[in-house]
Amino acid sequence: MWETAAAGFSAMGSEARLKVLRTLVRAGQAGLTVGEIQERTGIAPSTLAHHLRFLAAGGVVEQEKAGRSTINRACYDELRNLAQFILAECCADEVGKAANDG
Image (cartoon, rainbow, N blue to C red):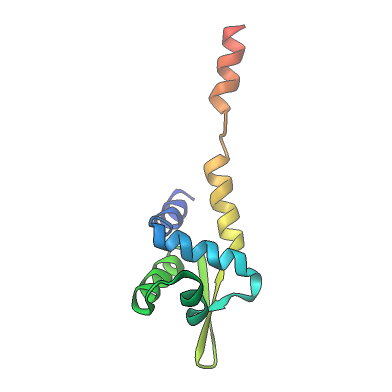
C-alpha cells in the first residue's frame, strides 16, 4: 500500500495537476474530454496532456477512448483509499499521551 499511496500522492504533486483533478472530481462519473478540461482550467493542450498522463500513471485518473475523444474521470475509489491511508492513524499518539498524562 505504501508504494501505491506514494504514486498517487506524487501524481497530485503540482498545482496544475491538482487543478485538473479537482475539475474532474467536480465533473462526476461522466468525466470530461481533454478539450473540456482545457476550457475549464485554461491549461495549454500539450501541457494538459502531460498532466493527464501523470495523473493516470498515479492511478487517480482513468482514461477511456470514446471514438476520437478520450474521456477522463477521477478514480474515486483510489482517491478514497488515499484519504483513508493518510488518515488511518489520525490522533493515535494523542490518545496514548492523554492516558499517560492523567
